[in-house]
Image (cartoon, rainbow, N blue to C red; front, side):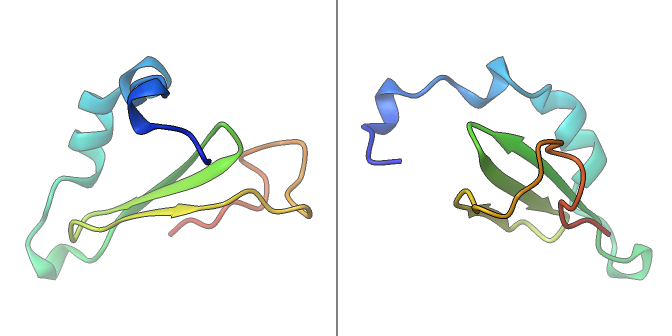
Length: 73
């Protein structure tokens, strides 16, 4: 975003981080992988149950509805 990370709003102002943690808490591998994707300031953020967080930059072809077309499992 070309911004100092300290100038950004904390994630918890946009997302209930406690609920997010409950959704993707690291699980036994027999439970399968879980991921949650949401949009913050036009960036798609995906949190995976195996501990990875991916941040994808805005795309010109993203729809007006941030939930429509967002990758999910």
